[in-house]
Length: 163
Image 1 (cartoon, rainbow, N blue to C red):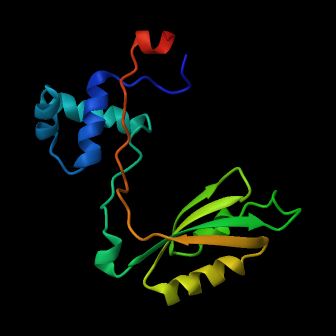
Image 2: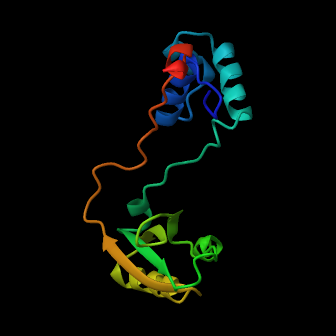
């Protein structure tokens, strides 16, 4: 038995629509997935209450607001400090868009948005001056094939669960 609630075929189709276009009306969502707007509304509310839909937000194009640089930085903690969680320290730096505690040679992977290379240098100096940070290795992105790809939600059926 999976550790998550099952997703029905209709719920999977609704999630696909909402991930592409979160502002669609319930009537439009229902029409897309073959049910009434009221039924679509009810299913969306259930998905929200279950925590499957975690929220709604505007997707802002970073370049449209002057953040032309995208970089990823691998952070290694100082020896003997890996039990200290650096998440809050990194969250205090607004240019850090994502922070992941990872396995491998580094301890964290952060995604940074900066206005230009001088701004990136400023942000990385903030990261490097964070207590318990020992080393950083940063890669600057030339181009991105895609970002924010919608999750492929597969309906869970009794057949899929028993396989």
